[in-house]
Image 1 (cartoon, rainbow, N blue to C red):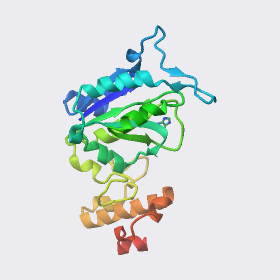
Image 2 (cartoon, helix red, strand yellow; image 1 turned 180 degrees about the vertical axis):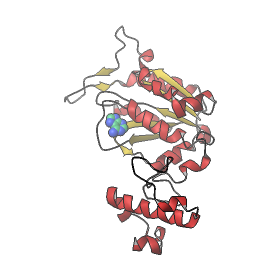
Image 3 (tube, rainbow, N blue to C red; image 1 turned 120 degrees about the vertical axis):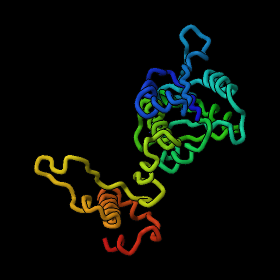
Image 4 (cartoon, protein in one colour; image 1 turned 30 degrees about the vertical axis):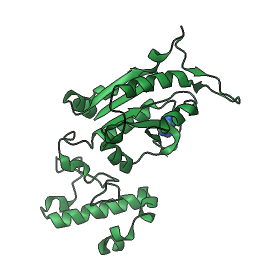
Length: 250
Ligand code: ADE
């Protein structure tokens, strides 16, 4: 997968050199290219923002540098169709990012992120590229950050760990909270490792039983309990078909 990020803070994306994403890059599974938006400015001050039409607080990112930057990035790869890019615009006004969207985006060959600062990017940029590309305005949660760079880090990590061969154990995202699969729609329950006793605390007997059926049942009950406590909304919206007889009794 190829990922381009256009930003006024390239150094903010340095964590993409570390850990899971960094290793995926080193192995050639991910081709990440970070670009400085100011390279596409032409004035002495490398201006990227201006005051908003209609008045109001804050500044708006000018369309010209974004247009030149995106034209240049887009020219360096396939134009459209199956191989074309998905343009992802992080904004608190976007559609919510979710595991489902991460799975969808992980199947795409090329993602281009446009993290903005200030009050956002001049709307005409989104309209211009929306006319010819798959453009998604995406929010990572109901809070406002100072810019879209942290959301890009969040989204890239969620997507990269789903790419084939990136996680050590291909099974390890099957039971993720929110993952489609056996725990569909439920939060993942507690986990334990050695030693068997720590500060007088043992581990649930069932995990030592070697009985796969009982362990699976216990994990599911824990997931149900945790979901009811922390995210009752997920239980409410759960497809009743996804709950078995035992779940309903829990
Ligand atoms: N930029 C600022 N806040 C954001 C959020 N919550 N999600 C995505 N981009 C943002």
